[in-house]
Image (cartoon, rainbow, N blue to C red; front, side):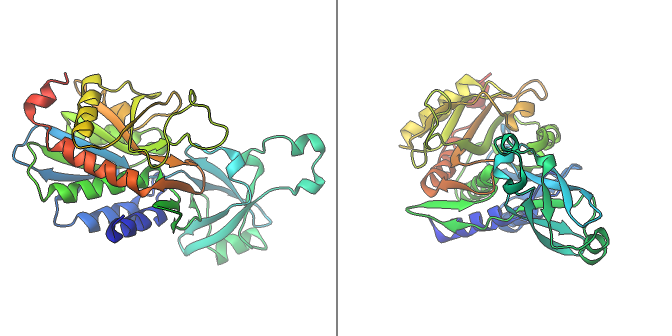
Length: 356
């Protein structure tokens, strides 16, 4: 992977951006796309990056969500411990004993997710899945006053996993929030490349807010853009780890971008799906088809906006999503950037009308 792509991914994955607090990620987008397109924001906080080609229409929407799963301060106990609630879908197994960072008005505060030690739990409790409401964050405070006055913690403060970006064997990378900072990276790089080539349409790259709590930003973004066609830039689930059966989820790292044929919020436009697969075959990019019966993307509200929008969800395969640290393969990421550019170059008015 090119050094600039690697640095972009590092910036994106290490940025703080839980639902409702996506400003840091939005600033990264603005900085990297300055001079490449027109940028604006809607009232909910989405950033809309308009790259005009040789025609005003069709309007090609490329949404990727800026937010990540995280937590929020719910209560500070009299002893100075922080009770918290999830923002987005967490499996409590992956939360306990992890490092987190609370973003306060006085600056970031480090903490560790704790619970009762197993030594004092009855056997039946040790064998149960511990729920998040049984956990707390230890910030080293000695009292509620210490936590509030000295550290500046208050109810409503966002909490983010501590998980720095790192290189792994081959071309693989670890870090938090690949869902969906990988998609944001694809959007940024695709718009930059489209600045060097002609395309018969106008592209709207959109960094959306609050996807992890109900795809809220995509609703207002679709109203602003009024797209003619939409390709959602996301991650997919890599099924190449022990315990996952082929009938549960398909896909593996390094085998190419994933093209979703079904998720819990959308049946994609079949003609658009086949068009993307045909383009991939022409430019020799391997794609992986997969179905996801649990979970949805920004495509859910976009495809039923207005009079209906032909929509497809594509993704970078990722291991361990919705946990502190995930893994992607740089080859899948680069292939998805190239595929999006090649697809956009072919989306003229006649082609988009054929999807209806």
